[in-house]
Image (cartoon, rainbow, N blue to C red; front, side, top):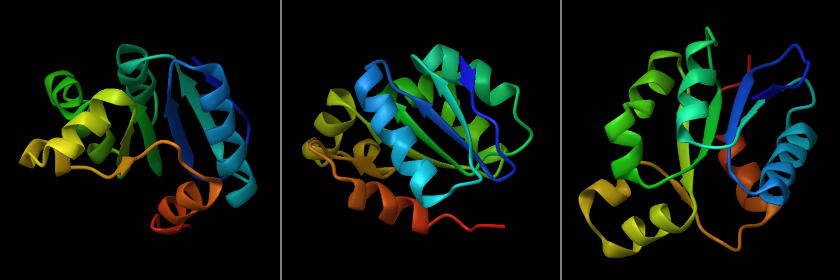
Length: 127
């Protein structure tokens, strides 16, 4: 787990692929210059990272809805005032299936753009 310095909201990025995690981190930093960005390589590390935070703005998590619910990661994020966005193959498959569990949280569909990430960031109250 790694955290950047900043004085703004806390943004969690839990993505295994370094390039994707860095792209998300760069986009968050451009949109919210004061953001504190916490990165984790997977859901288990994300859960530990969330436990260390008093408040979250937004969490990008590479996982499907079943994994998130099983770990209760969604509850931990929500308890800290954060919003959850899923990404990755499992999240996309669940979204495409049309199942109710696949539509519980927004899914960042690949290939995603900086503009798509910024639109999710704009939906988060700043302050």
